[in-house]
Image (cartoon, rainbow, N blue to C red; front, side, top):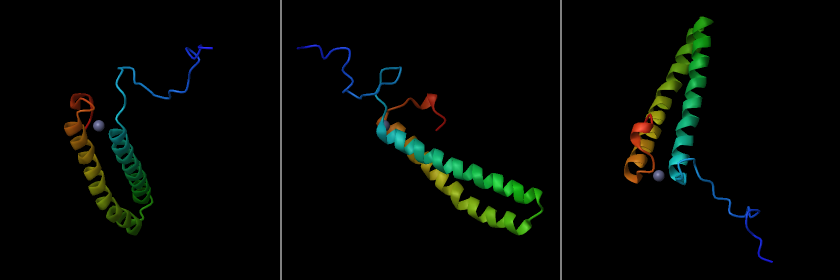
Amino acid sequence: MADAGPNDVSSGRKRESGGTVQCQERHRLHEQFQAIQKELDDLVTQQFAAFRANDERRFWRLNQKLEPMRDRQERARLALRKHIRTHRCQPLESSRF
Ligand SMILES: [Zn+2]
């Protein structure tokens, strides 16, 4: 019996449309960046709500949280850009980083 042809799903290798295998490390760094981005968006939304509610204390408390978060985001962005540059796993022109 030698019909392990078209029904063989054991090779779980995913390919992107361009034919290149996605870089794990770039993927990880990108996820990390997006996670921070999401946290930031969340904080900004909360801050805006505090602003609308005239809750000054809450507004400034959130502002203090935002600053280190923006730092983290910047570091994550740079790490991703550096990886793409050195690893060349994605053309820089096609990315926002
Ligand atoms: Zn890479």
